[in-house]
Length: 341
Image (cartoon, rainbow, N blue to C red; front, side, top):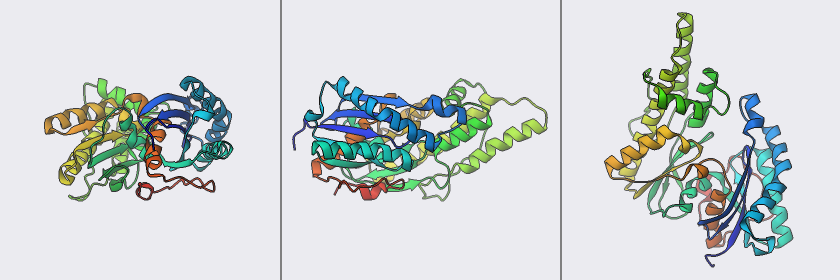
């Protein structure tokens, strides 16, 4: 296998229609994203049926733009990569049908790719990953600690038992009457607030790497309800800061402990919530104090995009693990089972 192969990668797992051309698993030649945020914000969250329809409307145009910006044609491509899961089944199907059609028409290999593997290997587009390493995955639907013993090998050592971090942020934002997506509003308020309302931390068992945020969400709602019952004025900034401080404290402490106990060489931050300024700052400061190498992708590669899918798919390209055209969407696709052989 050469290092100059061009992979066309497609990502449609949720509410972004994205197509990218990636060279050698490391170089982004083009990375086009059509966001649906304005469509879904009026509903306070992603509506699966609407998301699927928007993907159908956008996929061809986004693909054409990605090829145009890369300055390549279909004939220059080496393989087609696509997100197989996890995600919304209807949304995934749009990308999968497009990828299968291309692979069949162009007689190119098809590489089914794991969405979370993409988030993790987004770091490889800008950094050199050393093994063993630990990835802290924080997104709208996922909160996990993943051990990477070697390239393309994934072992989940901790995960949320209820809400993912992104879900908790959105629910708290709705309680504070902020529009969707709520995470950036909470982050901004927390960073600007002068006061702070202290909230509980869910550490779970002493040796556990798992997370739980439903109790924290309930604690936020209790503060809001108590303030209303007393006829007081809610300090949204102080509450946002207390919520974010609690979330970040648990994420940082468990991630640092995992790095230490597993003897990892690096900590990788990944996922949409990796764009959170408070989390990035806290994790950076703590890793500097502990002498731990921290990899954080740029903001453009934190949220869903297709370049990250191209980076992860390249792992399968190198090992010659291609996918049958009979492949189906897998909303609950296992990260560990997707590992490179």
